[in-house]
Amino acid sequence: MWLWLALAPASPQPPSPAPGPPVRNWNAEAQVAPELPELSGLAASRRHPGVLWALNDSGNDPRLFALSEKGELLANHRVENAVNTDWEDLALDGDTLYVSDLGNNDSDREDLSVYVLPEPEPGGHADVRAEKIPVVYPEQKNAPEFDCEAIFVSDHKLYVLTKERVMFLGRRLPGTATRLYRLDTRFPDRPNRLTLIERRTGLGGWVTAADMSPDGTTLAVLCHLPVPSIWLFTRPGKGDKLLTGSARRLILSNAGQCEALTWADDHTLVAGNEEGQLCRIKLSEFGPAGTGR
Image (cartoon, rainbow, N blue to C red; front, side, top):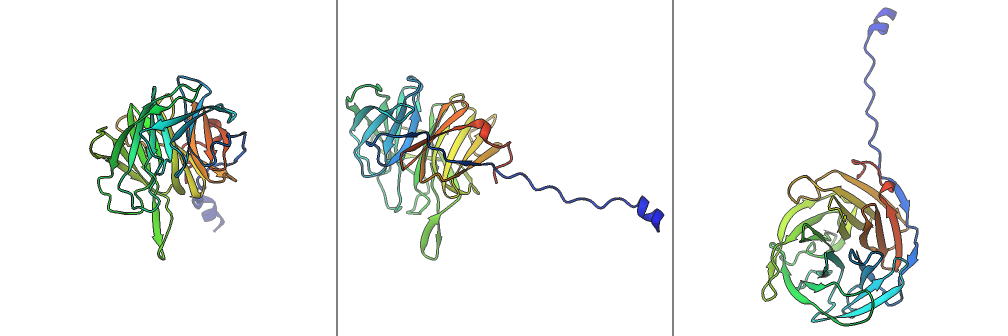
């Protein structure tokens, strides 16, 4: 008997659970100027290092604000030929700035649009004129998922990430999935139909902001309720299924209503919440690939 026990193979050990994503407290390093009571979008200027472009949420004046990294107001530009129905995010492509008027909380809008304008100078307060680009989803039928708080640019193309909701007992609750679309045309006189690229589930919260790294290798996606976090997706070698590459995630605690995200450089993110707090986050704070769930 003892000989049999000695020769018997050892029982296999259960595999160790995969490590979970790290958790990081939201440490506010700056407070934005009072002219931004509902901070909803950020974009770091590449022409003017250290300058952040920002905007307010729905119902406010159609204005762009240039901020220092400390949140100080540098410029305040009114955008002509534009209405802030539900501005949610902005993105830069060289010296071209995109403003997203794609917010659709009640899923009843028929006037979704993106405004395109030259990046203003960060000094002064001159008005800047925008071109309005009407936008429609290819399958939109007054469904709650056709809301958007996140846009970004990759390879000179504008991309849209939806903010999904789920229906439960007659209520719309935060969902944890998103659809990725691409804007392929920019007709000002007729609707521009978005191209669906892919859908990603299991993000832990609804998407409120996104930005591609300056070197074009990493997509950062900010999620709010029910679990605030930032995802990093490594860009695939080919194609634009940008949500299918290796992923890393950082959970944010005490983040408030986190709404804005941009890359300060290839190694540093700046996140903002609607309470006007700015938080700098280093890529070294994220776990290794595969620590998303």
